Image (tube, rainbow, N blue to C red; front, side, top):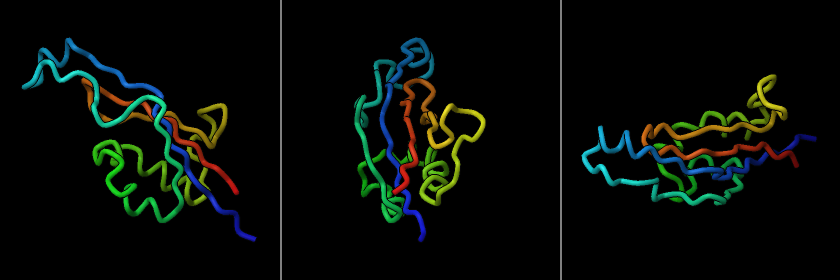
Length: 109
């Protein structure tokens, strides 16, 4: 019998680097990411992957973590030998002045 896999994504942190924003951004007062909140969670089924959670997820952040989400939904080990649990990964979006840190977990049914 095939195992079904889901993926849980949790927002762990929202960082902000005002010095970099002041030096490089057109709006030096941009502040932290406005899209996510610490503690937000999503549990994805395989079909959710193709719809990027129907607009409930930032496209740029999705681009950064989607390869790991896809691997986990297929039953892959996302961080074997790197994290304490090979089914858990800590990843972030690539906004260098206000990155969001995510925990990605493979859930086996």
